[in-house]
Length: 407
Image 1 (cartoon, rainbow, N blue to C red):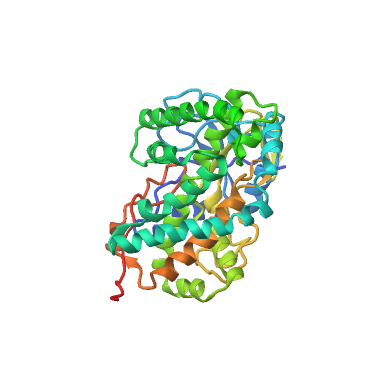
Image 2 (tube, helix red, strand yellow):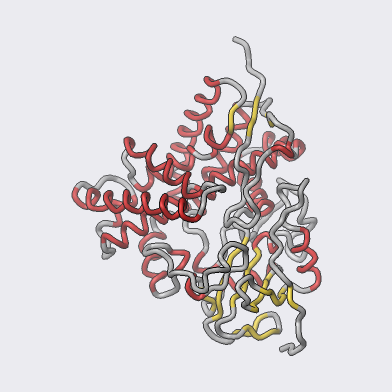
């Protein structure tokens, strides 16, 4: 184990290159080249760690001696430094609890999000995408792809999966959109989360009284309390929407900027679409940064992580690690991107990853099949991006157009 002092990284790099909306901050790559595990100065004065190498990042995510509880964390990105202590995760939020509480929730949910069950939803995803593509076609060219397509497709699917009544879906989508709006203040986001939580809280007793064929109704037969059911439902509704919506929009943007790779997607079959989605997940890494805190002293990469020290895991740096992926800064839809960490790893690996995969494999090819002349309606530099320090990266709007076919 090395006892040599490691110079601190003064702050976590988060500003992305101006002309490269799909690339991580260049400084992350330079840090990774020097050492895959670095000391990091946190905005609140904490001296913790930064993992940028793929192998080390994966090791941290797999090690239950590192906690994901927010009240134990020091946060590396600007904006929360005035909080000396973050509150515990809301009840039912699987990402912010450790075993055995996490194990209890996960065990109840895992069987409802299996590969087989999610693939059975593919036909319904095809119907939903077709409906929204029809609507885009009726409205004519010049639309913002996010509200027209990228947001509603996963919103409809997660609502149907959880059993949100059709009449309530517009209200749900408004609250979810407000919660994830990039320019919303923390107060506005908390208020939107509270509205969503209150809605799901009212939905739970209705599902107990009149269960239907959906995940929330299934869970009413478990030992979860109404508060826990409401929390799990709120967590799933929020988690199943923002990430997939951003992947759809940013993935479409990346393909429009890489016509050679778009041609690969267009010319591929179902297996090709599967491979393309995995590469886009790796290349874009929209859930780019996480934090864990050591519950005890842990030796990692030849260094001692002391109990109580936070370690920032840079998924975007790990997914561009040349030790794992050859020529990692190039989008290559023919690449076998097995082993990427876009959905995390270990016990907290994304529960809804198979649903997201099905949605992306269907929705991206369908978009470019329906509109073969689809293109940006503004210069690429005018597409507004989410701030790099937000938890989920993406674009705020994606104006597109296409050539109408005269009948």
